[in-house]
Length: 201
Ligand SMILES: Nc1nc2c(ncn2[C@@H]2O[C@H](COP(=O)(O)OP(=O)(O)OP(=O)(O)O)[C@@H](O)[C@H]2O)c(=O)[nH]1
Ligand SMILES: [Mg+2]
Image (cartoon, rainbow, N blue to C red):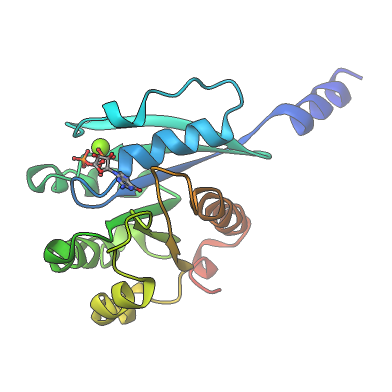
């Protein structure tokens, strides 16, 4: 009886946990995205004012529950000297959210280089990647096709893993829910696959 009840309790309340890294250059909007996600998905979360967010030195951690999945976000600082720390977290992660500032054409090439380095890391083989073209609330921003063109020579390096480019505004919340729901679908599907098939979609 106890086993039956504890099984039922676990089925109803226990969440499966997934670690998701939020990466991208400094000023891309990673921490704003994290705060916006917590506000949107966690009912009683009283978020900090988005305008008060300052550059991340180290990392921020946040949790978001989506159905039976619990996403543990690790938002890492994007400044050049902090990028060398990103790969310390790769072995533990189930998914990557890569944030691009769509208004910063000058740094797009720099962002592409950081993306390329990340995506070719063996420790991330088969890990789903959500690319967020952020700051789409600003009229002069680059469009999704513009960004895909700028990143085109990385495409072959993404391989056969799940990858989606999503228009987003971390500030207004546009595209945030869609991006997270896509990520949940991918990570849940991946853990139920044998490891060697994780990169086959
Ligand atoms: N207009 C607009 N501004 C945004 C958006 N997302 C973030 N910002 C602004 O961009 C700036 C940087 O945002 P952060 O969230 O601190 O960026 P970050 O990627 O965490 O930066 P680091 O912590 O330095 O790596 C802040 O002034 C934000 O208000 C967005 O979707 N639209
Ligand atoms: Mg930050």
